[in-house]
Length: 341
Length: 136
Picture 1 (tube, each protein chain N blue to C red):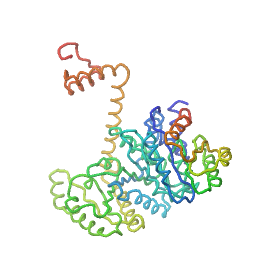
Picture 2: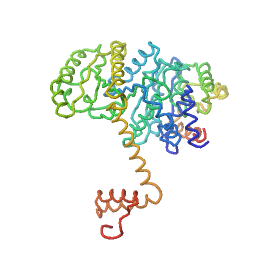
Picture 3: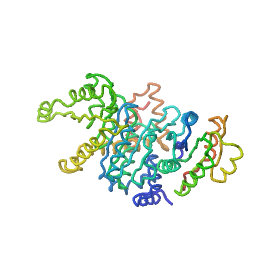
Picture 4: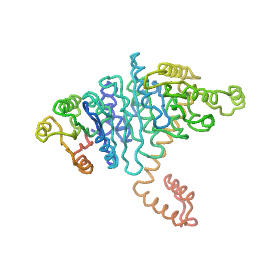
């Protein structure tokens, strides 16, 4: 079977509810193989209906437990749900421990729950490509709710906003004072901030501080919007205790409200700015990959090696080297002479 | 894909009290460059089969100390087979008497690693015996 036929076959089976084919397809997509690409050509037009929820936050904040609780809440209403859970790859060996499933064990044998772990695999910008593709596959095979749990993040890993329709930032109590809440970065991309572990001391105080710092500024927003300047998101701040389930129904209800709003947004989902950002990140990511692949293959590789050597020896500056690599690729080879090393 | 990391599920079926060994192995295999899915203690055969299916793993490593291996491990291999996962390499480790090994192998466990096995031995065994993905 050619990769194209195999991709079509897997896509068809996965659409028909074959979970093993779905699992294999996700592997192909994660590997960015030709099989995965062929399948994506069929599945991408069928996706775009699910609500993609990104869940991010510091390691240990309770992301996995919260996602498991949200899946449980969706299942109570009979709604299917899928999860893509990402953990980091070792930059040294390439190995990884994928441990998010530990918290998501209650759904074995439930055909309407599908949980998949992914290693970040460390390629530049590639995580977003593979994650978005995996989410699109789960969307296309009919999961209306797809949770994407990111690696534990620090202050500035804001790419998740380009992955999901709605971004949930999970915080634990005692994560810092009001100054932490007004710093730029992760909290700025949140549509919803969840203060998890609400049964712990300090949780309510943390939520009020976050609310005070994050949700003010309606007048500023109106003025900025009128002047055509970007306006920050004003996230909803919710309390939850994922381990006991407290606050989880309210969180799911809030997510559903946002999904409904997204559907009715100006001009429909096609003009949803989040989706445009995601589309752009995907296309640009794949473009970069293909560019690197072409530059690193066959006869180009020798030319690239020579360019790297010239830059290393300070005979050529890196900007000129990049320009030459691009010119070479586009068949605009410069005339031999003047600026060659 | 040639450079794809091998994906291993490390699972603890049954009612063992601790998972120190499984965690050490998971960590060791990570350092060998494998992607290791770890699912924690007290797994039912159904949970393990579901995880192996959804994660599309190459290997299922079962750690068991409780003595229930003759009951639980054949249920897992049968469950994997029933889901069409017969090309997944299944290995076992923990406290398993020599007398039981041949029966477990008949049930579909490819290899049994006892106390004193090094992580390098396990990693080498997996690399040598894992299924090839091509044409799967």
